[in-house]
Length: 125
Image 1 (cartoon, rainbow, N blue to C red):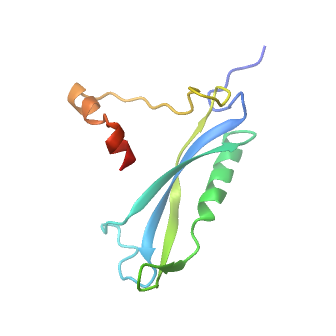
Image 2: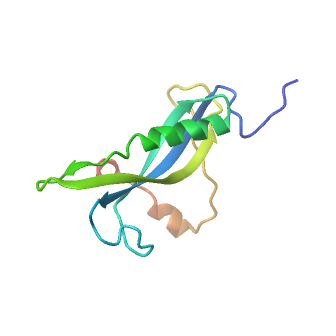
């Protein structure tokens, strides 16, 4: 009998998220801890042997997105900086319509729960 491991995907797929922070390369304060920045949390799936392998693959994908480029109408030097991995979860089911790929556990008030709801129009924003 095979032992169950909650961190090991039986189908070899993992879902993970990472944070990228946008900066103007020559702007002052890019490392100020209290400064606000535009941030993207991207979520991807990867095929991997185990959770550690998935972490490494997700990190490598994220770092590919961090090359400086000319941005905006003025063509200033900008860059997305990799800030870290936020989640790596095993996918327990074969991929397909309706397959559960992520879950989260919360304890929140009914008011808070209902504030999370989005309409189709809100999702498209």
